Length: 142
Image 1 (tube, rainbow, N blue to C red):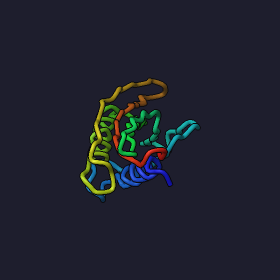
Image 2: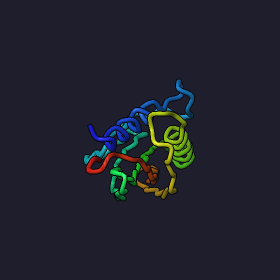
Image 3: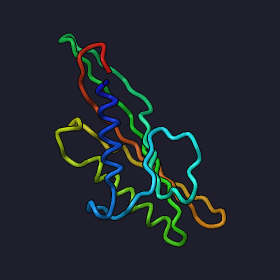
């Protein structure tokens, strides 16, 4: 397994652990990786993680520095409190991704987010959070 896949797997485990029982402010219904299908209201609140791009710097020592861009989409439908709920989920995701541990690279950066709202029969909220993860591998490995 590649180090990049290990990082994605660890992030997915952390996101799936977001629940009130685990000390977060929210319970999530759906956490997926690279989901292509539409998320219906019964599956919200939902998170969708994507590792969207990367860059590599090679060192003379035979190792490579990787910088991977991670995007996490947050989807919420909570009738009258949709946007407030969205903000608390953003805080939960930030807490989960930023938690100190030995299983993720130390260099993780939160790049910010973009919040959107859509009115249909009621208000739907969404956000895209952006992170950067930097890690090392031997040359010619991901």
